[in-house]
Length: 359
Image 1 (cartoon, rainbow, N blue to C red):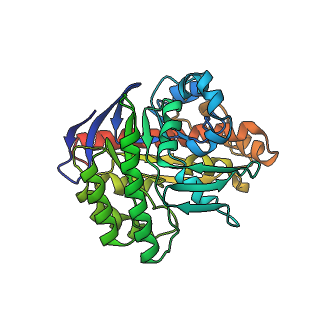
Image 2: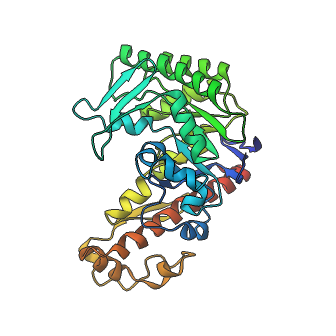
Image 3: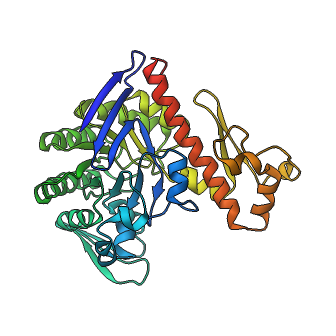
């Protein structure tokens, strides 16, 4: 299922291969986020050309729209979204809690009740239900239901969330059908070292196909985030993939890889593309520009002369700035192509650096 090919002599970074029913994935890797079944502004053909190994779908949104009955007719997400490579689906837990406004969410011992952001209808997510949903999606990697807490939060609140998260993770494993779908758990505990360690140890005893570290990238400092990784990852099984959820910026990804993280997802490349922030560079030297800046008004240079994507080599920065200024949809597509290509190339460079003991 997961095989470590090479361990860096310079850090705790690992080069590996994760076997899924829709193919092998080279680790470490980054997952473009297809929240509602689509990476914003891109087609699955675009993602194939960008060499994306896997995409991430969101259970919360896909459950509400188009709904399970529609996805059942397509026999899963792969046919529905026209993607033949692996798909990871999260449990929807993070979205449920992050969209908690005016009492829309209530946490119970058996799960979470919430109101739809679309029509206000009431719904219940339990460990069993989120597994059944993801089995309907036929995703390659499923995530357990966990309780996410805000940052900062009291230790009592974090401890309660850890207890529920471990309990729900155990239930998810028990009800999962014996198929080729992989099941990953999620370590919670906020910024409390003893809670993180206990959660990691308890989940390791239960045993899962992979171990995610959740509850980060929610406003804590980078120093605190890396500290959590430093004392959490040693408590996780070494022979299983480690997934840092919701992270992050290039430097954060690089530092996390050095600490033994194998998987990443984040909205940054797509979200920032929509606001005109473009990523350029490589592993050692990378930076961003804001294409809306006046200095790019007459820029004759290509969006990215080194890109493998024809449009990015042929369209100019001046033209892209114009598209943003008049709110043309093509602006979002070009900027997103640029940023996703940067992130996927960064991971490719990271894998090569690990292979050569340079990271």
